Amino acid sequence: MVLPYGLEVTFDKTSHLIFPSAIRYVDLGSNKLTAGKAEDAENVLRVKAAVRDFETETNMSVICEDGSFYTFNVKYAEEPEKLSVEMADFLSSTEGRLPSNRADIYFKELGSESPILVKLMMKTIRQNDERTVKHIGVRQFGIRFLLRGLYAHNGLLYLHTRIDNETNLPYSVDFISFKVVDKKVARRTAIQEQVLQPLRAYYEVTRVRAEGCERTVFVLEQFTLSEDKQLEVRLYERGGGRTLAFYLDEEDLLLARKIDNLKLKW
Image 1 (tube, rainbow, N blue to C red):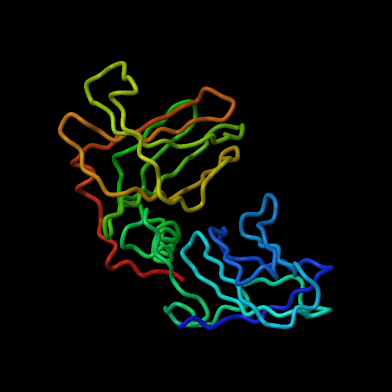
Image 2 (cartoon, rainbow, N blue to C red):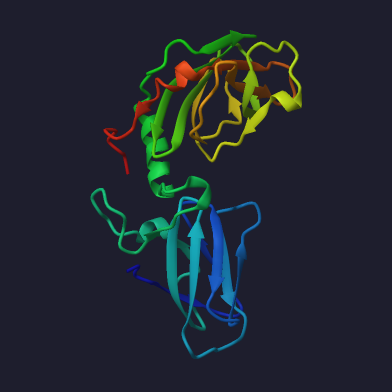
Protein backbone atom coordinates (compact mmCIF):
# COMPACT_ATOMS: atom_id res chain seq x y z
CA MET A 1 0.00 0.00 0.00
CA VAL A 2 1.29 3.46 -0.95
CA LEU A 3 0.69 6.12 1.69
CA PRO A 4 -0.83 9.26 0.11
CA TYR A 5 0.59 12.73 0.61
CA GLY A 6 -1.60 15.59 1.78
CA LEU A 7 -1.65 18.53 -0.63
CA GLU A 8 -3.42 21.90 -0.37
CA VAL A 9 -4.27 23.95 -3.47
CA THR A 10 -5.98 27.27 -4.12
CA PHE A 11 -7.51 29.10 -7.09
CA ASP A 12 -5.36 32.23 -7.26
CA LYS A 13 -1.95 30.65 -6.69
CA THR A 14 -0.03 27.77 -8.29
CA SER A 15 1.60 25.00 -6.28
CA HIS A 16 4.79 23.43 -7.63
CA LEU A 17 5.77 19.81 -6.93
CA ILE A 18 9.41 18.96 -7.64
CA PHE A 19 10.03 15.24 -8.26
CA PRO A 20 13.38 13.39 -8.22
CA SER A 21 12.83 12.25 -11.82
CA ALA A 22 11.08 13.43 -15.00
CA ILE A 23 7.28 13.15 -14.92
CA ARG A 24 5.76 10.57 -17.28
CA TYR A 25 2.05 10.49 -16.34
CA VAL A 26 -0.41 12.54 -14.26
CA ASP A 27 -3.97 11.52 -13.32
CA LEU A 28 -6.36 14.02 -11.71
CA GLY A 29 -9.16 12.65 -9.56
CA SER A 30 -11.67 15.30 -10.67
CA ASN A 31 -12.13 18.42 -12.80
CA LYS A 32 -11.66 20.50 -9.65
CA LEU A 33 -7.92 20.39 -10.33
CA THR A 34 -5.74 21.54 -13.20
CA ALA A 35 -2.13 20.45 -13.61
CA GLY A 36 0.70 20.42 -16.12
CA LYS A 37 4.45 20.07 -16.37
CA ALA A 38 6.40 23.29 -16.01
CA GLU A 39 7.98 24.54 -19.24
CA ASP A 40 11.59 23.35 -19.69
CA ALA A 41 11.46 21.43 -16.38
CA GLU A 42 10.40 17.81 -16.91
CA ASN A 43 10.38 17.01 -13.18
CA VAL A 44 8.25 19.96 -12.00
CA LEU A 45 4.44 19.74 -11.85
CA ARG A 46 2.26 22.86 -11.60
CA VAL A 47 -1.04 22.30 -9.75
CA LYS A 48 -3.90 24.62 -8.82
CA ALA A 49 -7.64 24.55 -8.15
CA ALA A 50 -9.83 24.85 -11.25
CA VAL A 51 -12.81 26.05 -9.16
CA ARG A 52 -12.97 28.12 -6.00
CA ASP A 53 -13.71 26.70 -2.56
CA PHE A 54 -14.41 23.07 -3.51
CA GLU A 55 -15.38 21.17 -0.37
CA THR A 56 -14.93 17.49 -1.17
CA GLU A 57 -11.36 16.18 -1.04
CA THR A 58 -10.08 14.78 -4.34
CA ASN A 59 -6.93 12.92 -5.36
CA MET A 60 -4.06 12.97 -7.84
CA SER A 61 -1.45 10.40 -8.97
CA VAL A 62 1.94 10.89 -10.63
CA ILE A 63 4.29 8.38 -12.31
CA CYS A 64 7.90 9.38 -13.02
CA GLU A 65 10.42 8.07 -15.54
CA ASP A 66 12.32 6.18 -12.84
CA GLY A 67 9.19 4.09 -12.23
CA SER A 68 8.24 5.80 -8.98
CA PHE A 69 4.53 6.24 -8.25
CA TYR A 70 3.10 8.94 -5.97
CA THR A 71 -0.47 9.52 -4.83
CA PHE A 72 -1.96 12.63 -3.20
CA ASN A 73 -5.08 13.54 -1.26
CA VAL A 74 -5.88 17.09 -2.37
CA LYS A 75 -8.06 19.63 -0.58
CA TYR A 76 -8.82 23.32 -1.06
CA ALA A 77 -7.24 25.97 1.16
CA GLU A 78 -7.48 29.74 0.74
CA GLU A 79 -3.84 30.01 1.79
CA PRO A 80 -1.97 26.70 1.27
CA GLU A 81 0.70 25.93 3.83
CA LYS A 82 3.23 25.26 1.05
CA LEU A 83 3.34 26.41 -2.57
CA SER A 84 6.58 24.60 -3.39
CA VAL A 85 7.12 20.97 -2.40
CA GLU A 86 10.37 19.03 -2.88
CA MET A 87 9.18 15.40 -3.03
CA ALA A 88 12.60 13.97 -2.17
CA ASP A 89 12.28 15.56 1.28
CA PHE A 90 9.16 13.50 2.02
CA LEU A 91 10.40 10.04 1.10
CA SER A 92 10.57 7.70 4.06
CA SER A 93 14.08 6.92 5.23
CA THR A 94 14.67 3.21 4.68
CA GLU A 95 17.69 0.93 4.61
CA GLY A 96 17.90 -0.65 1.15
CA ARG A 97 14.12 -0.80 0.69
CA LEU A 98 11.57 1.14 -1.32
CA PRO A 99 10.02 3.98 0.74
CA SER A 100 6.51 3.20 2.01
CA ASN A 101 5.15 6.41 0.49
CA ARG A 102 6.33 5.56 -3.02
CA ALA A 103 5.52 2.54 -5.21
CA ASP A 104 7.44 1.02 -8.12
CA ILE A 105 5.87 0.96 -11.61
CA TYR A 106 7.09 -1.31 -14.42
CA PHE A 107 7.43 0.02 -17.98
CA LYS A 108 6.99 -2.12 -21.07
CA GLU A 109 10.33 -1.17 -22.64
CA LEU A 110 12.25 -2.52 -19.61
CA GLY A 111 10.48 -5.90 -19.63
CA SER A 112 10.32 -7.47 -16.17
CA GLU A 113 12.99 -5.17 -14.72
CA SER A 114 12.11 -2.49 -12.19
CA PRO A 115 12.90 1.05 -13.45
CA ILE A 116 14.14 2.03 -10.00
CA LEU A 117 16.45 -1.01 -9.92
CA VAL A 118 17.74 -0.11 -13.41
CA LYS A 119 18.51 3.41 -12.21
CA LEU A 120 20.29 2.09 -9.11
CA MET A 121 22.38 -0.26 -11.23
CA MET A 122 23.39 2.54 -13.59
CA LYS A 123 24.24 4.80 -10.66
CA THR A 124 26.28 2.09 -8.91
CA ILE A 125 28.21 1.16 -12.06
CA ARG A 126 29.15 4.80 -12.60
CA GLN A 127 30.07 5.45 -8.97
CA ASN A 128 32.19 2.28 -8.69
CA ASP A 129 34.01 3.30 -11.89
CA GLU A 130 35.61 -0.13 -12.22
CA ARG A 131 37.38 -0.75 -15.52
CA THR A 132 36.36 -4.28 -16.44
CA VAL A 133 36.96 -3.86 -20.20
CA LYS A 134 40.46 -2.79 -21.25
CA HIS A 135 40.67 -3.59 -24.96
CA ILE A 136 37.80 -1.63 -26.54
CA GLY A 137 38.17 2.03 -27.47
CA VAL A 138 39.46 4.56 -29.98
CA ARG A 139 41.78 7.58 -29.86
CA GLN A 140 41.64 10.32 -32.51
CA PHE A 141 41.71 14.12 -32.75
CA GLY A 142 42.96 14.38 -29.17
CA ILE A 143 39.84 12.54 -27.93
CA ARG A 144 39.66 9.07 -26.37
CA PHE A 145 36.34 7.21 -26.44
CA LEU A 146 36.37 4.02 -24.37
CA LEU A 147 34.18 1.21 -23.10
CA ARG A 148 35.07 0.84 -19.41
CA GLY A 149 32.56 -1.81 -18.43
CA LEU A 150 29.96 -4.21 -19.80
CA TYR A 151 27.29 -5.77 -17.57
CA ALA A 152 24.17 -7.91 -18.03
CA HIS A 153 21.09 -8.39 -15.86
CA ASN A 154 17.57 -9.68 -16.47
CA GLY A 155 17.58 -9.21 -20.26
CA LEU A 156 19.32 -5.82 -20.22
CA LEU A 157 22.86 -4.83 -21.21
CA TYR A 158 24.69 -2.01 -19.42
CA LEU A 159 27.54 -0.18 -21.20
CA HIS A 160 29.82 2.13 -19.20
CA THR A 161 31.52 4.60 -21.57
CA ARG A 162 34.14 7.28 -21.02
CA ILE A 163 35.20 10.31 -23.07
CA ASP A 164 38.64 11.84 -22.43
CA ASN A 165 39.39 15.25 -23.91
CA GLU A 166 43.18 15.61 -24.19
CA THR A 167 43.02 18.95 -26.01
CA ASN A 168 42.95 22.54 -24.77
CA LEU A 169 39.47 23.13 -26.20
CA PRO A 170 36.12 21.81 -24.93
CA TYR A 171 34.43 19.00 -26.85
CA SER A 172 30.66 19.36 -27.38
CA VAL A 173 28.78 16.06 -27.59
CA ASP A 174 25.87 15.85 -30.02
CA PHE A 175 24.85 12.24 -29.35
CA ILE A 176 26.12 8.65 -29.15
CA SER A 177 24.60 6.08 -31.50
CA PHE A 178 24.41 2.27 -31.26
CA LYS A 179 24.15 0.23 -34.47
CA VAL A 180 24.52 -3.40 -35.50
CA VAL A 181 26.58 -3.31 -38.72
CA ASP A 182 28.26 -5.73 -41.12
CA LYS A 183 31.93 -6.37 -40.45
CA LYS A 184 33.07 -6.68 -44.04
CA VAL A 185 31.15 -3.91 -45.79
CA ALA A 186 33.45 -0.95 -46.35
CA ARG A 187 30.66 1.42 -47.34
CA ARG A 188 27.55 0.64 -45.35
CA THR A 189 24.00 1.50 -46.30
CA ALA A 190 20.95 2.03 -44.12
CA ILE A 191 19.69 -1.44 -45.09
CA GLN A 192 22.83 -3.04 -43.64
CA GLU A 193 22.49 -1.18 -40.33
CA GLN A 194 20.19 -1.87 -37.41
CA VAL A 195 19.87 1.08 -35.06
CA LEU A 196 19.54 0.22 -31.36
CA GLN A 197 17.86 2.82 -29.16
CA PRO A 198 19.16 3.02 -25.58
CA LEU A 199 16.35 2.36 -23.09
CA ARG A 200 17.99 4.50 -20.43
CA ALA A 201 21.10 6.65 -19.99
CA TYR A 202 22.63 7.76 -16.68
CA TYR A 203 24.61 11.01 -16.62
CA GLU A 204 24.30 11.91 -20.30
CA VAL A 205 27.11 14.21 -21.41
CA THR A 206 26.74 17.34 -23.54
CA ARG A 207 30.21 18.83 -23.03
CA VAL A 208 33.65 17.60 -22.01
CA ARG A 209 35.84 20.39 -20.71
CA ALA A 210 39.42 20.90 -21.96
CA GLU A 211 41.70 18.18 -20.51
CA GLY A 212 38.68 16.69 -18.76
CA CYS A 213 36.72 13.44 -18.87
CA GLU A 214 33.09 12.34 -18.55
CA ARG A 215 31.39 8.96 -18.10
CA THR A 216 27.91 7.69 -19.00
CA VAL A 217 26.08 4.39 -18.46
CA PHE A 218 23.72 3.27 -21.23
CA VAL A 219 21.12 0.48 -21.07
CA LEU A 220 20.22 -1.58 -24.14
CA GLU A 221 17.90 -4.51 -24.59
CA GLN A 222 20.09 -7.60 -24.55
CA PHE A 223 20.89 -8.98 -28.03
CA THR A 224 23.26 -11.33 -29.84
CA LEU A 225 25.51 -10.87 -32.87
CA SER A 226 26.20 -13.28 -35.71
CA GLU A 227 29.78 -13.88 -36.88
CA ASP A 228 29.54 -11.28 -39.66
CA LYS A 229 28.00 -8.55 -37.45
CA GLN A 230 29.38 -6.14 -34.86
CA LEU A 231 28.05 -3.42 -32.59
CA GLU A 232 29.19 0.06 -33.55
CA VAL A 233 29.17 2.71 -30.79
CA ARG A 234 29.75 6.11 -32.38
CA LEU A 235 30.36 9.49 -30.74
CA TYR A 236 29.27 12.59 -32.69
CA GLU A 237 30.58 16.09 -32.06
CA ARG A 238 28.09 18.95 -32.07
CA GLY A 239 29.07 21.57 -34.63
CA GLY A 240 32.26 19.72 -35.58
CA GLY A 241 33.63 16.76 -37.49
CA ARG A 242 35.49 14.87 -34.77
CA THR A 243 33.50 11.64 -34.87
CA LEU A 244 34.86 8.50 -33.21
CA ALA A 245 33.63 4.91 -33.05
CA PHE A 246 34.56 1.64 -31.35
CA TYR A 247 33.22 -1.85 -32.08
CA LEU A 248 32.16 -4.97 -30.18
CA ASP A 249 31.64 -8.45 -31.58
CA GLU A 250 29.79 -11.43 -30.13
CA GLU A 251 32.85 -12.59 -28.16
CA ASP A 252 32.95 -9.20 -26.41
CA LEU A 253 29.25 -9.38 -25.50
CA LEU A 254 29.80 -12.80 -23.93
CA LEU A 255 32.28 -11.18 -21.51
CA ALA A 256 29.53 -9.06 -19.94
CA ARG A 257 29.63 -9.37 -16.16
CA LYS A 258 26.59 -10.35 -14.13
CA ILE A 259 25.29 -7.65 -11.80
CA ASP A 260 23.84 -10.07 -9.24
CA ASN A 261 26.60 -9.42 -6.71
CA LEU A 262 26.83 -5.67 -7.29
CA LYS A 263 26.21 -3.71 -4.07
CA LEU A 264 23.62 -1.15 -5.09
CA LYS A 265 23.99 2.42 -3.82
CA TRP A 266 20.67 4.03 -2.94
